[in-house]
Each structure stands twice: as C-alpha cells, then as structure tokens.
Length: 295
Image 1 (spheres, rainbow, N blue to C red):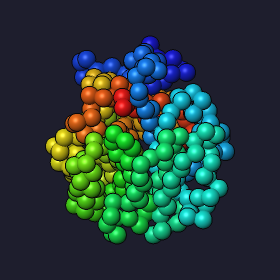
Image 2: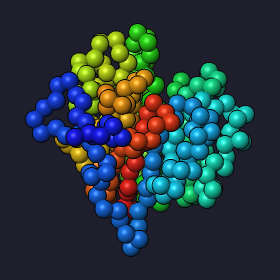
Image 3: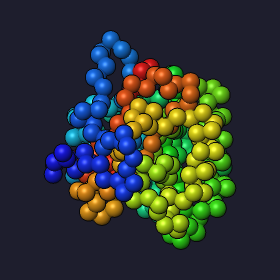
C-alpha cells in the first residue's frame, strides 16, 4: 500500500492492465556498481526555471545524494548574460555548458554540469531554423555522445504540431543518427511525448493536448524507436508505471505523465545498468531521471 510519504507507489492509472505495477525506486533499483566497474551516472532534470532550484539548494543536495557525474538540465529560462552567474553551481563540478534562447528571452534553454571533462561540446543541431531557442547541447565523451534535449511541445491548441512532427523531430533524429555513425549515443531530456498509454494516468487525453496526440506518438516511433533507439526505463521496467511530470497538486495522488527519457542507441543499451526516476525531488513540476552507464 502506498504511503502518504511515497504516493508514487500507488498505481494510479485509469486503465491499468493485469501485471502493471507502480514504479518504486526504493525497491526496484539494482544494487549499485562497485568501484571496480567503470561507469558514469547521468541525471536529467527539467527544472522549469533554474533560479528556483538554485535558491532551494537542491543541486548540491542532489549531488551529495546521487553522486552523479553529469547533470543535464532543461527549461533553464536563462538569458545569455545570466550564464556567468551559474557557472559554478556545484562544488567539484568544474565543467558547465549553457544554451539560451535568443528568439524569446527567459524561455526554453538547456544546460549541462559535469565533473568529467568532455572531448568536445556542440550547441544546437546545426540548423538555424531549430537552433534559436537553446534546446540542444551535445557532449562527446571517450565512448559515447550525450545529447541533452528539450524538445519543443506542440503548443496550446496544437499550433506547433506540424512544426514538431514534420520539421523538428525528423531533423533532430537525423542529427542524432549522424552522431551514431561515429559513436554510440545517449539522448537525455524532456522529449515532450508520452509515447505509450501506460505513460499517461488518464488515457485517452483530449486530442488537443500537446504531448499526447497520436501524431506525436507516431513521430516518436518513426524517428526514434524504428531507428533503433531504446527507451531505457521501459527496457528495464516493462510493466512499471512511473511518471516524471505532474500537474498542479497531482503528485500527491500520483496522477502524472512520463515525458522525460533516456534513449540509448542499440549498440550501447546493454551497457545500461540502471534507469530510474526520482519522484521525491519536488522543486519542479518534473522529477529528475537517472541513468547508470558502464563505460
């Protein structure tokens, strides 16, 4: 039975199926890897404005608790002139990279904070049309690429749906596929799509709800699943219902949606040791997700 302190352990799904269980990170995560196995721990977090999380002290607390190597941030809401104030957020993490929206200030944006120096860093996907809102940062490490992405949603009334599924998704997928020709790829971030019915607590959603349309699901499947990219959480937990995003006051009832992912190219999926959600971190309407990767 779910406790008030752990509401996410309650299976709150309007169309739950036999065999489905609520995701419980306290009992479903594997034993940590020992120091004799080289690995990296990556966290991804849509902070819905980085300033609020900084004020709460959550970044340092997360670093102490999770001992991550890399933290990917989405929806940072920074302007380029603000970046200098956020360069040294966590002691011991000397490398940080920020991409800000220039099309609209205090909007969108991504960041990466790392204690491991990357081989190279790339901002955007190389297409001017898609690189005005600071949505992608790519870090190259010795054995893989890490792509931190904040995928644009389809907007109110789905006014950007065609841009999302006809332009952004194919271009982003092509960018990732080109990287994969050199090294395996991990995509991390808020991908703004609940790609399976079990990722939505109350299906079917209305047809004008961004992130939940059939067009977005089909685009996700065509541009990622069919191209060999694997949802690491669903691979590890095929029957677990776990959410990463909640509406106002819905976390306490575990009525949420899963919009945040790690996607791994097929050549690296077997090196994933753990893929998990941290639903008790509550400084944003999203929760952080984590990945432990053998390197």
